Length: 445
Image 1 (spheres, rainbow, N blue to C red):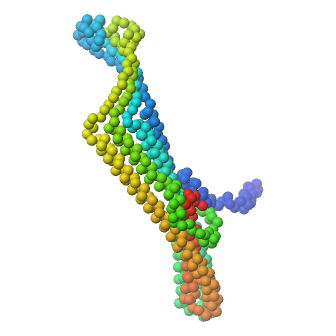
Image 2: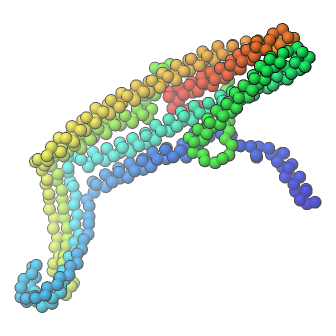
Image 3: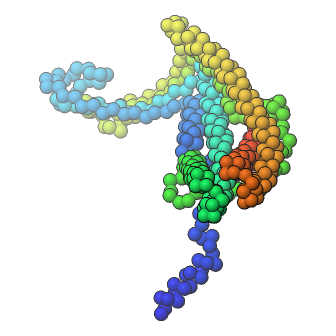
């Protein structure tokens, strides 16, 4: 009995909270935020940024002196030694066949000047660090655009599924009416077969629309790096006819704003700056390098009669010096490096022009699509309303046997086509206007 009441309580709880069993609904903002955090390709660009930071730190550390400690312990076997013979600065006082030498030193070097190669390398790595950040921003923008496009495709396809379901319901009703007409001999069997064929075609269209919806959902899940088998549902944002008919910003306004902040443009500009630094670094190869060096050291040996501590003290020395390296002939390495850096700069300048052209082309494409879909939406909306009224009249005439089955089916197909055209034009107009604003302001709404 207790189990019975427990089951009843669970059923009541499920009825009170039906949303617990429903699939999570993803808004466009949810999709974007999740993808920016979990997309693998974007995470890889973040790792590249961390690698660039390490390169910058290493080049900054190159400005400091280096310091190293070293020691060596060597054992020697001499089968036939002679006493009183000087060896390696020591007078051999014993006749041991096996003896050892030990040395200990600390030394450092510091490059004082090398044509500002080190400082320019730091600047170059800092630009590479900034470039890696912009690479991530470029990929993030591309990801946002892809998500928005799939998101809108899902919304449109879901609406298309509803239209096809409504159309199928109408076809089923028409087939049932046709069966009744055949029974009272008001319709031929051939006309009924046409209604049956239309119902089957509408079932196929519904299945096709459902498959398209699943495919778009799968592609969006792939962008989000979702690997679970849970149902994936998108949350439709508030849309209205006014959103599809809002004013469209001009191509030149969007382009001029986009030039000031789009990461792909800044990336190309940084490429030009980095090539200027590469030229300076290459020219430094023709300049002298000045360095300082210093070190302390001592040594011990078993061939000496002095104690180990006395040997360390007696053999202790300190040395310092200045080194100057002047390149005279380097087999054209410096000249080749300079020429290649100059050619690379020209390549980056072409990249900048190419990115500007691509940016303008993308903006112009979205603008044309926004204008075209806005115009299509106005026409499709009028056509849909007209087709809806026309189909109502055709249904009434069909009931009164004033028109044949072909005319009814034609009217239904025209209504379905008009409704789908209206939905598609509406969603695409909103999408392209939103993308234009994204290129203009950097924010996708």
